[in-house]
Length: 346
Image (cartoon, rainbow, N blue to C red):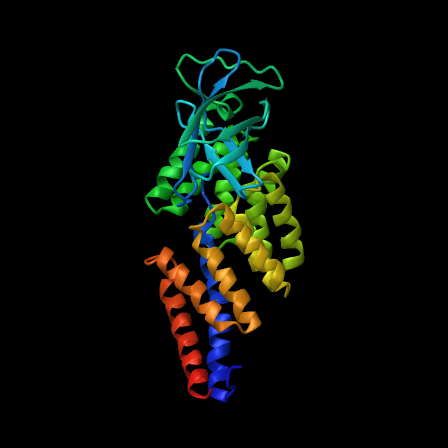
């Protein structure tokens, strides 16, 4: 049992609550502006790769989501196809995987693939559920581009380029022009929300996320997760939990979503559920550093400070120069001091 003294109490509280403040301040840096091309798993076993083609003319389908699931292995992965319709997922344990292409307006038959060796390669065909024909004079086509005007896409791309140059305010005009050109361009509305949140404009971000959700018919998980995070920041964890769970139903592969849900559950004083959510995040992406801070806060709530220290160390290893590194380092030092004082009085 830890020795209790006024000084150790102060150190303990500092160690316990500082990482929670860090989560509030820095998670926005992890909210994705665009969907990631691949996850960051570091396991080293097999790989599954392949090509997604439009069934009508066998041309590549670019920028569509391919999802892999294995409940037995506990693996949930998601990746976008490249301009040639190709995808590749590495670091997979051997076993049976269900693979499906998830793109609104298109259908594909789920494939069960057995990974027994170092790799397998697949060809997956998708067809329009509303008989939209892909008419293009070039070799590849993005399924979303069939429904979004080219000028709108160009404006969205200009906005992304502004963001890459660290000019979030300058990106907004392009994203707004994109929505003016295509009222159903929910990704552009989401980008507006992400930028407004980055600029500290929560009301504007909330409106943009809500519009993205409405326009997408509730199918675009990043907007749900962004809105849930805003409710978390507003101190409305009950509303946040509902929205986050809805987003995770749309995208159960999101490590980011499970991490925000874990933070929300901590705010609701449900640390056991928060721990499970953080571990779901790590299951999906073992390198997602923020999930380890959620675990650190869970252990602090329980008074398990050795375990808290361990999770802080994992974060610092994964993010040696990441957001909040200095603050996490201070929290770690506070935990170390508190543990040293406790041992000295044992």
